[in-house]
Length: 417
Image (cartoon, rainbow, N blue to C red; front, side, top):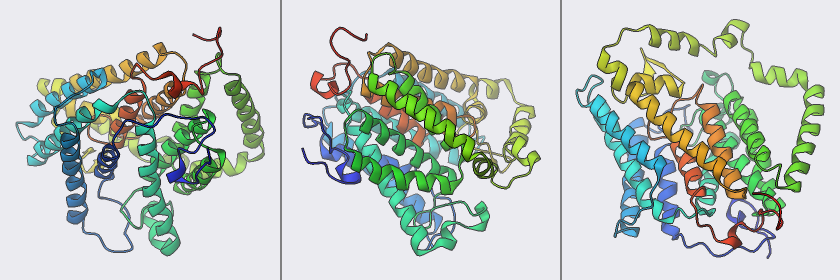
C-alpha cells in the first residue's frame, strides 16, 4: 500500500487494515465537537473577531454536531459506557448545583451546553468499536487547527507571539491561548508516534506531522503539555514492554538518546522551562497557587461543599483556577470530585485489564495525559478537549475488535497475555 503524506495520509501504513464502518459524517460531527471546545478567548487575531461571533460559531458547531449524530443514529442505538454514564451523573449534579442561579443564568447555559455535548457523545457510541477511526478524526481535526496557528505565525508574527503572553505562540487566525495550542500539539504528536510504532501510518507521514507540531509545542513554552506528552508516551510504552520487542527497543533508544540530550542541552532546557520567570513566580506556578489558596479558604455552605456553586467560567474572583480538581470542587463539590475520579479510575482499570494492543496503548497515553494535565489545567468537569480525549480513549477500550485491526501489535503466538 502506498503511504500518503501528511494529515490526510494518516492511514498510510505497511499493515493492511479493513475499511472503517464509521460513516464519514460521524467524523464531521467529531470535528464540530472539537470546534466547540476551542473557546473564544486568546490573543488578538489578524482579522478582528468579536467574541460574540466566535461564541456563535462554537455553539452553532455543537448544535450541528448533535443534529448530525442524531440523523446518523436516528434509532438511538448506543453502546454501554461507564465513562459516559458517570459523566451523565456529573451533568445531573451540575444541573442541581446551577438551578438556583448562584452563578447567574450563565450556569444554566453551560449546563445546556454540557447536556448537548454529552448527548452527542452518547449518539456517537454506536461507532465506538475499538478501532482507530476516532483517533484519526482527532489527529486530522487538531492538525487543521494547528495548521491555522502555523499560518498565523507566518503572516502575522506579532499577533501570533504577543507580549501579553510573554512572546509565547498563540492563535492569530482563531483566538487560541498558548496552553491550548500546547495541549493539541502534545496529544496529536503522541498519538501519531504511537500509530507509527504500531505500523498504522508510514514514517514519512509521522515525520510530516510530528516535527512541525512539536516545533509549535516548543514555541508555546507550555510545560504542562510537554510533561504530559513525555509522561503519556512513557506510560504507554511501559505498558507494552513485556509483550513487544519493538517497544523495548524504542523505549531503550528513547531513554538513551533522551538522557544524553538532557545532559548536553541542560542549560537550554532550563531556560525554556523557566520562561524567564523569577523563582517566586515559578514556585507559585505562575500565580496559580495564590488563587488556589484563596478558593480553598473561602467560606462555603454545606450544600456548596457537597454539590458546588454550579458551572462557571472556571475562574474564582476574576482569576482562572487552572486546576481541574479545584474547579470541580468549586463548581460541583465533593460529589463532582467523586464522579470525575470514578470515570478516570474506571478508564484506568479497564485499560489495565485489556490485553496488550496498540489501541490500549493509545488509550493509556490519552488517560495519562489528561490526569497529568489536570493539576494545572481545568476542564475535566465540563465540555472540553479533555473530555473528548477521554472519549477517544473509551472508544479504543471497547471489546470486540476484529483480529485484523489489531494484528500489527498482538504478540506472537504463545507470548503475552
